[in-house]
Image (cartoon, rainbow, N blue to C red):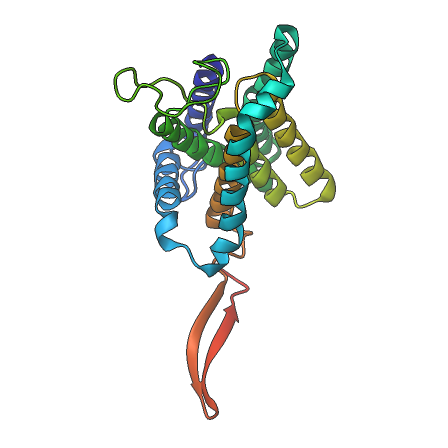
Length: 274
């Protein structure tokens, strides 16, 4: 609980620092209200995304669903094979805290301040978008945790029951999705998109993978919890980047029907300027 509270505090503090900047239209250069508006708009888009899915989306939704089902089936078996080792669990819990909470939160704050000091607009943008993605992930994960109400490996009978006692004792646990995993993967996707290099991608995605695996070894989450968290975090990071970054080509493409002498066709357009 404390790492999550600390993360929320850091995100709000960063917004407050950004609110002191000269007026502009973007989050981080105008006011905290702009940042809050962006987060609210993105959160609405993320929550309503299932109602706007296309055939293209099913290309990754189907494997994600299948992977979740397989992980759920193997959860108890995996935790039994892992065994219990308090010393090891404490060590990996610390690793996941620093890699999934403290590290990303510090990087967002330091990156933004360094960007302002060096007049590096790209670094400022990356920090702001990463902050927005993590805030969206935090909000969604908290809501899902209470809605799914799954016990953690060290709660109840250790099998990760959903709504184990119905409404009588709700909430009984917030194991799914993994908060550390969703935050680490949303952070990684935005950074990897802003700095599109092999080295950067290898670093941030390795960090996110380490955080996810560490949560299981620490017996804080089941494999399916971190799998779902990773998938959602990756999606949220990509959603925020493509919606907010000027470098994104998401809204530069358009398709429209066109009539020609040979019949009706489809016109694909690309806008080189925004």
